[in-house]
Length: 436
Image (cartoon, rainbow, N blue to C red; front, side, top):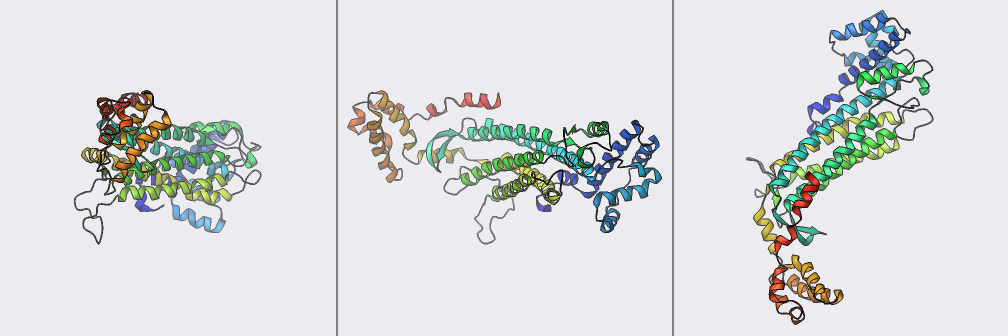
């Protein structure tokens, strides 16, 4: 985790103290369930909760010092708790294995991280919807292969992003549900030394569901899907960030990141206003996607368990969620303050002498009786003259002077095919599909 790209709420979920607090809750809830079953004294569970009620500080360095000797983090934690609670602590961890604690804790952390990410998406969706409605009918040129194609609106660009992140939200909700499972099933997952009722009790107390069948660990296909979902969200972030970066190019300049008072774009060139935030988002997206492959490789563990996944998850759990949280918040800020230039959009559309209307003329000729092949050739030869003149010539005027065109279409019919509004007649339909 790099502090530069981290926010406090998400970072706190992954702190050592928070991890140990979750471990304690798992152990205390399990001891409570064991007491209800008569396996351990009720006084044991009560002693744990009584100590917890004092809101004790977790002495992370002391636990680390014990682990330096035991070489086992869960045993170190249990030893430290026993030193604080006293004799009744010996009834903790009855019939449990370390993975019961570690995997259930990870499920809690990922569920809590998901809740923050879902809230991040909600804020982003709110901003995208506002900007989409604001620019619903702001004409802009649509591009394919980076080349002028036909008109769209800037609002449609925002609506498209809204729909994509709305899908991301649905996927994340499903991934959260899939990864939020509890396993308190003991060594190799057979419940030989612990009743399944204990697992159900712990799951209910921590807001998790019961893992239907665990080995000694929760199956890692769940985690693979979770991190894959984060990777897809990161790719959506990059797609929108890349759009902003292209629109901010000097030759385009249809939109740009907000440039705050006192901000500097270059140490050498005072005129520079660079898309640094969206370039940063592109880089952060690469990092989040980079955690997907290790998560996929964690699925194949040996037999009932090994710990080859453990070191991986100590990295990717915090880093992927912290980075994505930061990226979503940054993207929300970029879109919220994005400077949009409708006049430049119109200027860019007008730059190429009406080439953006070529398809309408092609269709009109075919409807007037010209074969598609001949119609395409007629329009293309005129369009290429405009292209080669860099927009200095007018496609409409060239078509009006072409006898093969005027043999099929009147001057008014030609002019009618250069109506910008024609391209925007279904914007309302698309918005209704996206926003309801």
